[in-house]
Structures are given as structure tokens and as C-alpha cells.
Image (cartoon, rainbow, N blue to C red; front, side, top):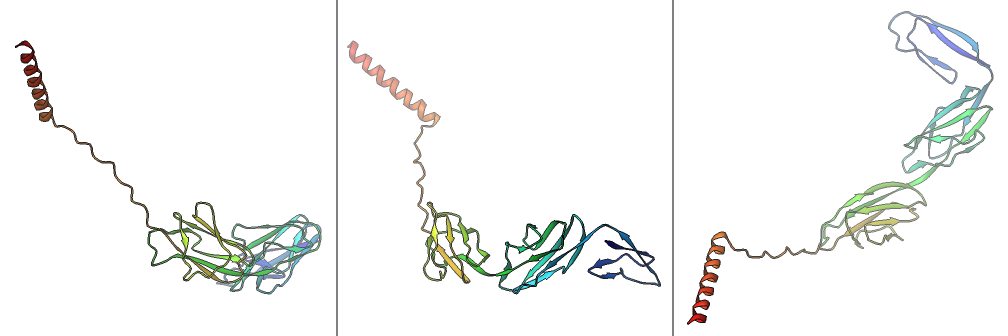
Length: 232
């Protein structure tokens, strides 16, 4: 139920596990250690899974405290979001690299796992008849058995040459392609049709100001001539 408190003239340091490390020492100094009763202490113990490392080790915290571990996967692995053990449900940070359990009110364990991960890449064929691009998902790493989603700038088609992912499909407008159940590194190549040419509206000829004057004069002469014929 006791926790160490560090003082003295040495630069403040860090206390991890059972080891206290001072800051950078540049002259003679002292470290004073005292112990204070903080109530019951509990130990949260992580496992040592294959496929990566769990940084932080065993955590000793006061009642209601929290413990955080950092997960570093080996190449080709990612942390599994499913965490076991007896500490109760915790939370991941946004990057899924740190896991925190809180509150801790009893000795408990945390069981992490690393799972195989694969890379799915997407590109546009150099021989595509029309233009287009990959707007999302050009390179993505996914956990084994999950899906990869690729977004195109406009409706496209799969180019069979160079495409090695299997079982994928387009959405209705052919701008999103989903590769299901990824179990190996693979690639997708897409092509686009030539975009249809939209004809511009035909220009309607218009009369200039002088053209209108001449047209008015001609119409006036015609009317005058017709009037003379009726009166003769």
C-alpha cells in the first residue's frame, strides 16, 4: 500500500517498474526517497505475445488507477483489436498502438495478440484508354481475413493484367471496389473508358446593328412597293 516519492537535488527522473532513473546529471547531487501510504496497490500484468512487443511491462497502480501499454508489431503483423485477460475492457488510441485499462481495482491480467497483416495496392493501367485515378486506398495494410476498399475518381473496370486480388466487386456506379477476405499481399489494376465528348451548343447567328438597320430599310421599301401596287 506504499508508493515511493523521490526528491533531492538531482534532476527529476522517471520511475518505471521498480527502477528510478534521474535526469541528466552534470554535478554531484542526491536522491531522497520516502514512502507514502496510498492505500491498496494492484498489479496489472500483460502477456508476451508472438508477432510483436508489448512495451510497459507489469504495472502497479493504486485503487481506481489506470495502466497503458504500447504495442509494437513486427513486420507483417498488426495488433489485434480484441484484447483478453481479467482486467476488464480497455480502450485503444486512434492509431491502435496504445491500450489503456481503467479503473483497476484488483490484480489482473491483459492478454494481447498480434495477427498477420497484408498489403493491398491499387493502380491505374498504363494502357488505360481513358483517364482516371485512385482517390483512396492506393496502398493499405489490413488484418488477415478483413476487406480492403478502393475508391476511383470515376467509373472504372478491372484490368486483368497485373490484378492478383481475388473475389472483389464494384458498387453500382463502379467507383468503389471491395476486396474481401484478404489473406495475402495482392494488387489491383484498373482502367477507364474514354470519356464521352459533350458537344457544345451550336452558335445562333445574330444580326449586327447595321444589319438590323439594313433589314429594316429593306422591309420598309418592300412595304412601300406593295402599297404603290395596290393604289395603281
